[in-house]
Length: 230
Image 1 (cartoon, one colour):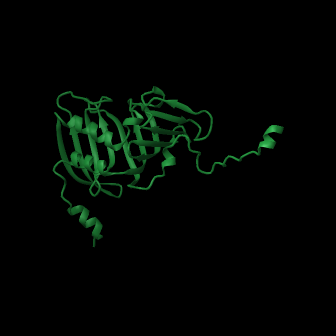
Image 2 (cartoon, rainbow, N blue to C red):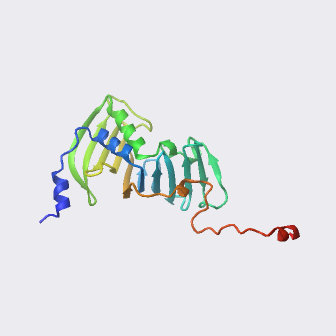
């Protein structure tokens, strides 16, 4: 006998507009945490621990490549702080979100790196193109809706993307897997979203570039008499 949760997932009806429904779900999120595993035509595999907290705070912790690197984006200052060798270690770089040093292989910006920005890109392609629901399918252990968005004619969105294949979790409509292709059908990038946690409590210090990393020793006050001797 199938587990009840699996049976309910199989019986769930797809939303009339999967992308619009997914974007609405994203808009209602306060935060999320995910492991992003991606590969593409211009680089090797990437593994990034990604944290998002409204309004548009981003923290990226790199496992592969650049193991240990951390980037924190502050939407108030519109600046990204980068620690190539880990937070709290020299050097500390303050860059604009469009700086080539921290843009993705296809020009992705950290201030446009959220799932919401991904869905908005797919919706832009959908506007004058076509969308088809390919049915329900399994991605790993996840039940998903497979949605295909293709631009009209040779239409493209940023990064030369003409087609998106999105696998959205049947329950949350959060992406589980996304592939992008160019006009010729060439795969540009394949992305998996693993270990997804939605509306998870994320401490403000994780997104504060001035905060000390966890485990860092606290500063010790030096008596004034001792400072005078030194």
